[in-house]
Length: 419
Ligand code: LLP
Image (cartoon, rainbow, N blue to C red; front, side):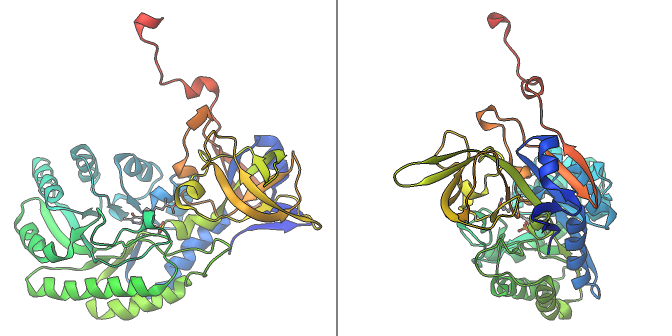
């Protein structure tokens, strides 16, 4: 459920008319619906209303400060994977005791910053990382609360590039080493063992791989307790898929919650979640204008002013996004390849897509782009970073501006010998 819908044939974000925004802001731009962000957070949290949980929104999905502030006001924590994300979460007012720090390559500086901020938990992925964290904690006279991220060797995820729970993936502590590493961790100064962490991938559209992985870590918790560890937290990561308009509909959070409660109830642990896409994905759209319609013998190209630097998901993961006209139109359909202006063949949003007939100047919306859209943008081809707009009812605000040329080159410097 989201708040992008036609009113009298014109696409609105909540009560804001998209075409009017496009004239104001210029295209391309992202629009987010605050009501949708809030709704998704609540649907997720409410599904676990009777359990002890921390919902640590995965900042990587959409890290805009205004988005983080919206979620902070709902009581969200944060799952961060870099010093920059940690600073963003703190800046947005997310309390440190709701922040978990994930990632395979935390640097010592990042660990120092997170320990100084007194975050809730480090999800540690290897023995060298654990030793570094212990050393830094001791040097700061702090104790790092940790979970070890366990690789359960379960295949999942909407695309090979976003699957993380197989033994061959770089993520997590290998299953066979888990118990020994917990025993080592228990003896390390500066380290307090608190829980177990697992995250098997993203855009997972069925419950089976989740259930397989969660059962495995459940049995691990039993073994770890038998070994003398005190385990009172279980971080189940993110990964719940969203409907993208095509393919199997992923399970509703209620079904996901029901399965998890069934599997984890006997363990008596606090559950931590790191949802990203499920919160932000369907809360955003990318609005773009048709520059040209180009016809070749083989194909009809809809050349739009958004490109792979603005939304890389189709190029990187063959991702499908619905594309709809901003002005609803009946009549003839045409088959288009929808492409951007970048000089790469992979700068293509859709291949052989049936759309209402469109012409130069028309606006289109790429749907379900609130997660891993703006967060993965670049300035490739010296295209300015795409702006982001937040809508709340009938109000809107620019929450990331389009940089000017001077801003784009502000960090570039001409060496003396060239000036
Ligand atoms: N926790 C950890 C440790 C993660 O690595 C991720 C995502 C999440 C939570 C959030 O997962 P979500 O709930 O959003 O599925 N750029 C790709 C997705 C990469 C996901 C990376 N890790 C895409 O656009 O599909």
